[in-house]
Image (cartoon, rainbow, N blue to C red):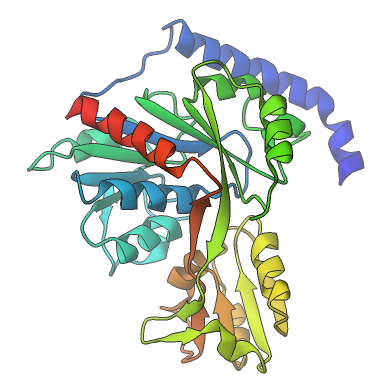
Length: 337
C-alpha cells in the first residue's frame, strides 16, 4: 500500500492545487460564505478517518446543554436519504446516519439534525422557536460555505496531520496550512500516561499560531457494558469468550483496551459506517456474546435479534487544562448570548 501511495504523489500535487485555490477563494471573498448571529462551533479534522469527533461533540453537548438551547448538525454520513431531517431516538441509522442517531439516543434535551448542505441545515435550525442558542457542527471543517465562529481541529496522537500527506498519497483532505483556521487544536486518543516532554514535542511539531491553544485528550472507557435492556459489568467477561464487532475507522484503541484487560475475544472488522448485509447479520446471530461500539450498536440493534449484544461507552477526557478548555467554549457562547 505504501508503495502504491508513493506512485500517487503526482496526483497529490494536483489535489493540493485544487484545495489551495479553493481555500484562497474563500479567504479572499471570491467564494461566498455565511456567518451567523448564533454561536456556531465546528468540530473537524484534516485527516480522513477516526480522530474522535463524536466523543468531542458529545463532550461539547454535555458542557453546554444545561446552560443553552443546543443543536447539532451533521452530514449524516452513510444514510440513504437526502436533505434536512431532525433525528429522534426512534430514527433508523440508515435514514439519518449512525453518529447523529447516537447523539439523539444519548441526549434527549437537544436538537439533533442532519443535512448535507450545512447552510441549508442551519437555515432550518434558525426557524426553531424558541430560538437556538448554539449550534455544533460535526465534521464540517472543510465545509467553508459556513464560517463557524469557533473552530476545533482534532488530530489523533498516532496519526498527526503534521506527519501526513494530501490525498491520494496520504489521508489529508487539505493542506496542513488549513490548521491555521482553528482556534483550538486537540491531540486525541493519547496514552493516559503521556508525559509532558512528549506533549511539548508534539506542540513543537504542530507549531501553533499565537492565538491557538493545543490540548491533549484520551479515550476513557466505561466499566459497564450497555444495551437497550440492561447493563453488565465488563468484569463479567473475564472468563467468557466473546465476539468484538467494529465498523469504525480506527478500532486499535478499543482492541488495545480489551487486550489490556486480558479478555478473550474474536475480532470481526468491518469498514467505517458499514451497512451490514443480511448474510452478515445471520452470521453474527450465531455468536454467543457480542461487544461493539456505540456507533455500531445503533446500526446493529434494529437488525440483530440477539439478547447478548452490548456496547462499551467511551468519552473524551482531558489530560490537563480541562477547565481552561471549558472556559474558552463557555466564554465564546456567552459573548453571543
